[in-house]
Image (tube, rainbow, N blue to C red; front, side, top):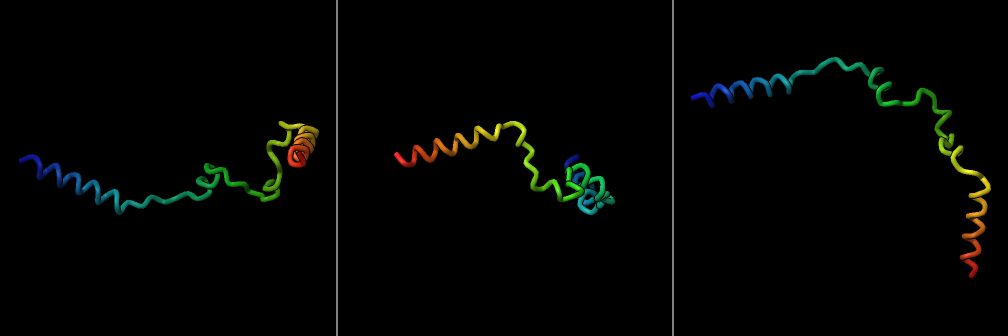
Length: 69
């Protein structure tokens, strides 16, 4: 006998969730996602500090040597 009431309550809650549309603060969402405000940093290498430039040149030379052999 209690199943009808339970189902009705679940239906009511589901309907409320379906048609509930809270106001969305898009600026807060943009800050949370971390969207960059300026596009100048788009081409900056964040990881350039971690590697020496000399290592990359030596790696390229060793790759060329291995291809020649």
